[in-house]
Image 1 (cartoon, rainbow, N blue to C red):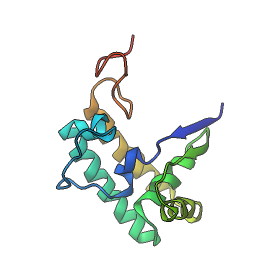
Image 2 (cartoon, rainbow, N blue to C red; image 1 turned 180 degrees about the vertical axis):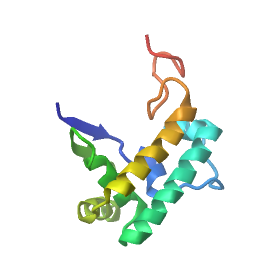
Image 3 (tube, one colour; image 1 turned 120 degrees about the vertical axis):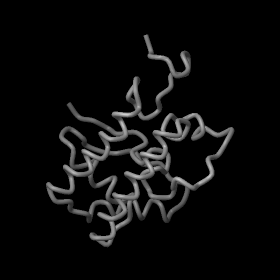
Length: 139
């Protein structure tokens, strides 16, 4: 089975753009995303993105490139659908193809991601909401 990943940068969270002190937007689609809406999850996700920034520095890459490089290294992932607003973001995302992460780095990033999902509760999906049910489990 092939997997196409939608929103692989978690609406910018995995680019390193957002930090714990970054004021959260209100009234936007992002403000409804569970990663941004739940303060504990947001803070943990920002912490993880900052750690990924350390790996990015080591590779002369951006946090977004490391995020995408990790994702495309996962079994079954054939492509990612990274949205963008600018040509610079497109070029940056394409640069992920030049980032080769070690097995240790891949494992570390995976473990860090689990730190976030472990505090999310249910449902453990990026969006954390269902249009017809709010934050409840989709039945």
